[in-house]
Image (cartoon, rainbow, N blue to C red; front, side, top):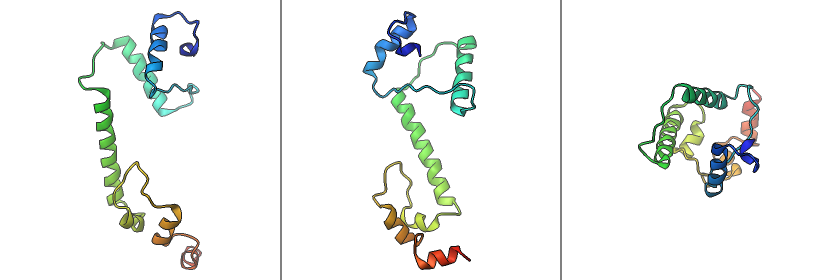
Length: 128
């Protein structure tokens, strides 16, 4: 990868190499190409379109604002699916709000309260 090569002299690569140390939240990973990683395929298509017919633009809001809006929308969709789902209702009664943070219950406590675990009544009902 050119960005990792300190001897690479292309100006855009050098600029990225200069900026990366001050942006610790950006992580670069190698993905095998052309193996149908949907996100990678979409990014590749958009990059091709941007260099062939795109005009430079500036985001009207900071990236943090956009990330916050996307996160909020994703949590809202997740909550709607959780509230209106047909499965997991006993767990829903205990943990009605979705979150990307731990609920504070360990696996054993959730198994006990929901009745899903190595209990004779549960094991017998799943064998019938």
